[in-house]
View (spheres, rainbow, N blue to C red):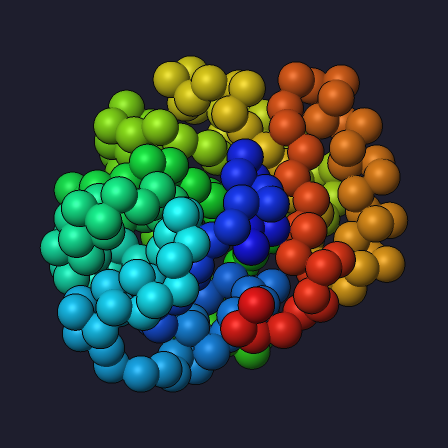
Length: 219
């Protein structure tokens, strides 16, 4: 079940790629980024799993799916099955994929790793977490939504500065999402953030899967 964005509540099967070119401080799927793990499945095996589960929506997420060239033939196969395809990406890499909804989550400074704990990754992450040309390609080439992870009002101001650099982004497709995996914390952060979104003509993006299932793998 999709828990975020425009398709919240849609009956979905998730294909999670393992591996990421970024290292977000707050990442809640570290098994697919900081410490990647998982099975090495062929495209045929992935497609067979999707067919068996029969959900009409397929969400390809990560990690960072755009790292893998196999994403191109995989999305072509899923398109041939008639599935609706969402790709969840940070918007730093581009592949000419088949996609019905490009879900772009540009990373703000609140995602930067602790430089004392991870000096090399902190430097690399800061330098590569936004790629203007890639974001432009994605929003011009696909139906899209743009989601930002927000902790404080300063993050909202950073979002405004980002959007000023990208006038091609339709503000009605922008969503702000509270950071966190604890339902109480999400509710507290969500109260003021939802009002901010209403006042600034942006969508509010709750993390409904946390409410429904908790911060668990495989749901």
